[in-house]
Image (cartoon, rainbow, N blue to C red; front, side, top):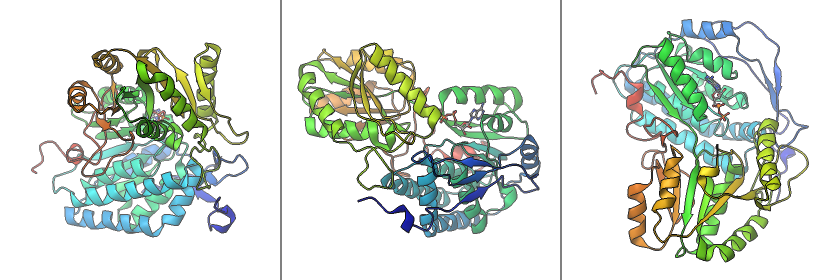
Length: 463
Ligand code: ADP
């Protein structure tokens, strides 16, 4: 059932990438990019952007001053090129980010949806100016493309800083955008780490920032913008979550277990929407946890190329170590309830289940295949809801129940951007079910929703 990587044209391909500027970039020494699933494989090299490159990009940036219909046509052409270059995009996502087949395909679909949705809604309104777009590694094509295509649809100039873990996919994406007709002054790429991001969010030549990543970084960016940019400069931030699910004693157990397994362990838990803390009603907890750990045992952990793999690697060694330390602490404290066996090579972490008294015990988001479990006694869910709301995050929330009144009761009280009832806690649909959180989870408006593009337009522009 494994796909033979040697049969694919990109199995040994080497991508060599560097900043893409509307000006010249001084040559520099490239560094290797790693494949998280296979320490012996390097899919290519990256020449990181320098401080001089940041300056060059800021000087050269120019808004995309063509009619909305023309921007829309070009963005639709980008979507066509993504579809035509599916194989290469797929191979990069797979080798650079260690994504599984299913996840990589879903990601490409989402990126194309963003392009076509923002193209269809491209406003005539005047742009804000130059936007910095900073993206994470967990959706290195979809989030990257979503931010950029919204900013471009509104006619802004974009300077993009992809995550340092995934420079290769962003480079091909920008090449395809230029090939489709986006001018170079309207879209430049600066591969780099947090220092490049910091330079691009603390410069008065920047007029707005779109950011997806951690809450801590979003707060730093807000402070840097406040000190250096106009008071009205927009920050559109999508950040982390401490996402919970409640399973009450009326829930259908098989349905709930499957939803939990997918929500917590799909993409190795590396989704901002992933389930982190499960609340199970005490009177069903014994048999339910047994069923849950049984379902965990059936998960297969291994190469992302295999169609039967359920859990692939985490992004890099630093991430692996951080998650392993968290599990080790739980083990030492006698709170590790269940754990699978981790493969030896690559940056894999096997799924685990950790006991907590409540979500308040969790200090931060653990970005991996680790599920925390608490039980609750009361027939009234309000204490649990209060505890979840008290984290200050508000991204996704799941509920498994067969009491109809309870759905409305919980919906009215829970602070969450996206709520999922009797299903897995995964996914959004560009256009109809946009994604985004509140509180510590983001500024809104939701990506792929009707209000998102407006944030990339001058607020006094005619609409
Ligand atoms: P994570 O790596 O956990 O997704 P981060 O917030 O560290 O979250 O990273 C998200 C993006 O923000 C990455 O592209 C990263 O390089 C960038 N970044 C990190 N630190 C800063 C900073 N101080 N200013 C701007 N961008 C930053």
